[in-house]
Length: 241
Image (tube, one colour):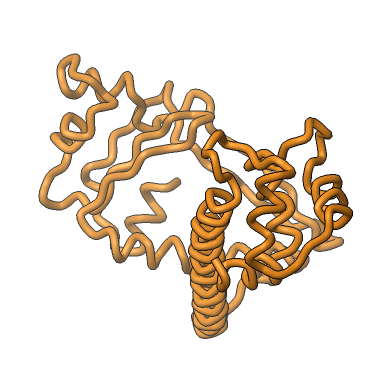
């Protein structure tokens, strides 16, 4: 049947091989009276080329090696498909651009068709599909531009956070007078004197607010949490220090 259809459409079928025990995988689609589709498959055992057949054709070479598979190419071959059952397939072609265009057209047509009732009646014209591709391309470019802007914003936020961390570390070291990695109440009081007059009660209140674990010292982690919650205050401190 397929050989005759090809011949009727002026396609050279001289290279076709016929085997009564091996089938060419086919899917027959019929349209019911209610315009719903019914499918019938003709495929087992199928005649698609597989890894075992590649090994046979290449005299036992590795069927997963692309260089081995490409040995099966000849000047008149446009594309070579290797089926991998549940894992899909691999393809080899000398014209990647044309293949991508064909797949894009087919995928767009499929997406437009499955939303309608009836496979054949729902098929769109070439012009309609191409117009849909152009619109989808513009939408994709918009998403790409939006993604780029978001990426740039994320980079700016990361840069700002890195700068804030540098400032926090610098200020923390100014408060940590003895360099032991923590700030005592005495160190906090001495450092705050450069900002103006502070009372012992104010020092106690600030220690209680920042020293969340209550060990009597302000760790760098506790200072960081306070700084993130009081960015304006820390910026003012940074100007003085």
